[in-house]
Image (tube, rainbow, N blue to C red; front, side, top):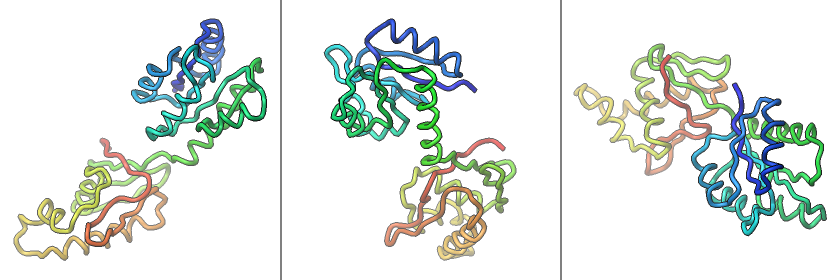
Length: 227
């Protein structure tokens, strides 16, 4: 699969050269020459990384990177600049860039730096586990855990609520109230079942108890898909 990359550069010749060169290395590059539109494109995504020039006409690449980080964007960002002093590089890194490349640069070095930052980002933000309703499995990489129907329903409920703690009574009403013959303590029992099955399975998350608030997913949230 080809990677999607955003180039933020106000020099059309450099943009064209970057786009052509990156295409040879498996990147499909989009481009913007103004900070506001670039920020919107980064928000829309998804991009695997971005290359941002420090000077964008009357706009500031440094301000763009700071805004992107302030909005929680975690993709790797490389800054390009003809400014090569130590304080210039420091300013780029302090703004939130992952690397700083001085013009003129060797294209192979630029690609190598991109790949290093993408690899580091992958280690910081591992791929999420997948919940497969058909097989009632939790899968991540080569690991899979099979759940009962009620265990899977409970886990899916925690995932669907976006990480907000779910009180015991809310989970009970959603999954057990129609049974009529069980108490709210059944929620704790099934939370225990899930924790034992998921412990040590390498699935990237755990179920935590938040005092007076309920239960929630902690870690890399899984996604629900067909399976």
